[in-house]
Length: 390
Image (tube, rainbow, N blue to C red; front, side, top):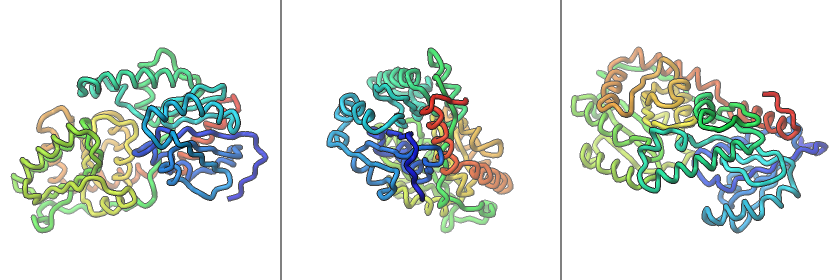
């Protein structure tokens, strides 16, 4: 890639709080698909911990990766670095700060941030938390609202998130836009023909797949109970769960459900976390996908399943119906038995499964990292030059 340096525009990206999960994946894919020179940027400087920086391109002329000892420690050290070191670093290297993690440092430069975490803005989800967890979400909401109001630009991932957050802000951001994430091409798999459940057996089961971190709003234990109910009724199904242990109480709840319904691991498997580089292989083995999360901004996992051509049963919460569309299968996570009933309906209707898979696959084609990167750097350029158009 040609990298001319006649432009004066230079971005500083604060990745100090991007260490794993969707935020890190977004940064990796964004930088990998970027052509910032096209939008007038000569250089991108990224500050982050060593593990984060090692996942970014190492040999691009316009990319400057900067580490600091404090960025390889806990949150207190990283917050201290953001307050005491980042403003000076920015003044020497950048004329725009981009903070995709949601919290912005004090600086005289134009600042753009992103709305990534909907948990602080969903009253129903905050109510699920107890003790310090509920206090933490309230503090995080206040910090993010303060950042959004102070920023020169805020990027939302979905219309749903934009509307929900704006309703809880004292005033709108100076500049706002909606830029969805993309999905990597390796997940792409045209939908397979859907067969009647009668063509499956316990030896060759219909494979259900659910990938997500184990947390209170992900409801893995409910998925286990629904699968067990249908299995006990004679449905030849298998459930594959994948996800890192994110919340100890939720992990205990999941383990209890697994011990109760499948103590011999005959039809449910949960190996824990699986490297992201292998995830597309697991989607390809599945016959259908379940997404039981009740709180999302833009769920990359749902996009991956759609791109893999899988019929999907999803919670009706948040932006999921807007993303998956009217042909998907839905249930209410707070309605006992709803998941099992809808799962049974999906299994019994191969024609509806096939229509859902075809429609989801077509919808997933609208999401690409190249499109996301192009829109993001166009927005950053507008803010940097003081002339946002939206």
